[in-house]
Image 1 (tube, rainbow, N blue to C red):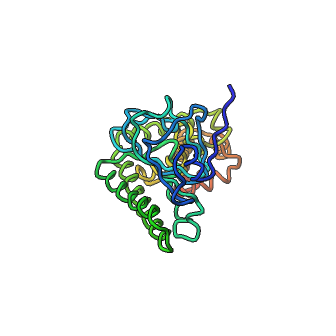
Image 2 (image 1 turned 120 degrees about the horizontal axis):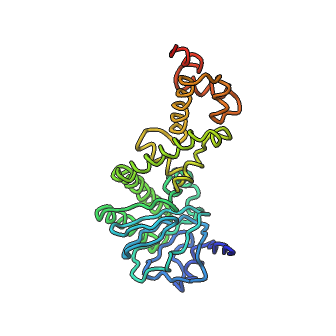
Image 3 (image 1 turned 90 degrees about the horizontal axis):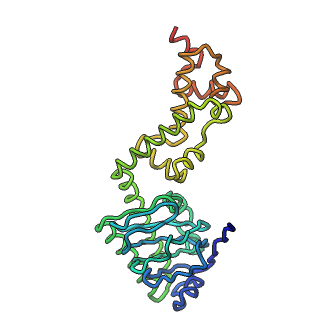
Length: 302
């Protein structure tokens, strides 16, 4: 089956034209009410040239990216330019409510957000992890967004951009806080993810044929767990204080210790079995993690 190319939207004015809305108040920043959103069955995925922040309410289930989400609480999503937003499974729900905020990268030029916005990792989570909000949190977010809406609907002057940028920074900072709260409060789900990660790595390190070909990569682990590399690393930092790469190395060293203490294999043979092309690289990593060379570790058991 041929896959349709995503429909590319290059400007906020184009969004308004597609939805038969009046000309936008500002060419580089805008907002639409999701009640006015129209579904075109010919367009099942969209790629935009700007940042999109959305808050959706008013439907029971909704497919967003690769997962189905409940709408018992407010749900936000953050999409960076060039990311693909896929259509819903059964079109747009009739009772969908909320808003979508569009920010063209040109609006951020020569402002504090031009570089800082790339540091908000949740713009990379959009296809895997949306943000759930309590009623109180949603009120805070909506208040900030109302300030932005009022400002760009007012007469534009030399202060307009500064005021909107300041509000956007507050919005993104609150989103950062609420994401970290979400990491912490989803203890059961997060524990299951950590357990699955342990199982994936254990299975990988016990597969001699697979392991000898290459070391497990962060991308491989993230793909296996069906999440982005950035989200996985952020989650692990919250749960273990380690990045994904550090977590992989920890399990790798555990496996190396097992082989060094229970087999007669040489260091070079162990390095090869663990996916290293050069034993020196294995020895260097082992010593950096244990303060002992592989041979010194082995001798400690004799």
